[in-house]
Amino acid sequence: MKRYTQKGILVTLTGFALTSLVAFTEPGPVTTPTAPVMTLAADPVDHSIYDRLAKKHINEKGLVNYKGFRSDEKELDKYLDLLSKNPPTDKWNQDAQIAYWINAYNAYTIKLILNHYPVKSIKDIGSKIKIPFVTTPWAIKFIPIGSEKISLDNIEHGTLRKKFNDQRIHFALVCAARSCPRLRNEAYTGAKLDAQLDDQGSDFLNNPAKNAISPQKASLSKYFDWYKGDWKEDNKSIEYWVNRYSKTKINKDTDISFLDYNWALNEQ
Image (tube, helix red, strand yellow):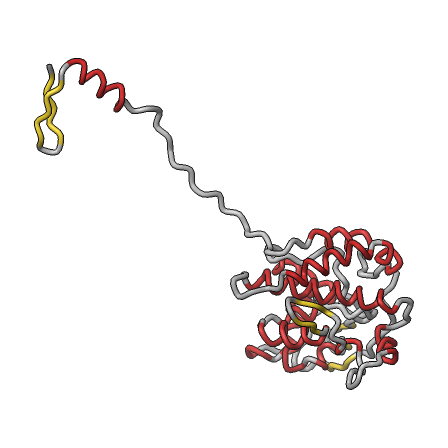
């Protein structure tokens, strides 16, 4: 018979009881708790359908094969339906929300062109509109998001510019015109958004057809004129944004002008 003291209590065990105790309390192999695996949260909406279509029908210059999109329009509609049924909420992280809205703008712009194809310019759609007080394609409320229908203007000005303080969205939204930034041939995602927007800025500012820059004279995109207030937010300037991405730098003495905008369709 052996005697054990546990928490101040004297316990007497018979040999049988001791054997039983050992059988039940003998430690097994020591294991180290596994730390949780840290992964980047996936976007609440799966953008893979649009990603596949973009890779298939948009080339490295951002030009679109609209005829190809027409052949895959059912797949595009599946993606748009997914967006429609899963609007962002404030529970989403900010990058996932921005990625959703940029993809929605670009994908629905493609859909708008397909609805009126063939056209030489998105601006030609304006003359075809038979809706009172609606004179531009960007004002058509044809986009079902949740329980309401919204326009491209609502996405750009009512949501992205109003809610999110990231001027780089101007490098990502593409209104189907040649002078627009390159239409990216992949979907935007929350996890990659920051790098994607920086890449868009670099591509846009270093494309001489869209921004012709020298230290003495900079002929910039009309974006820098149309949205001059945006570029000056947070005590920044047009000079700041140009120099952030352009390989050729400008200064306060650089003569700045703005290029005419080419509204021809961004078609291959």
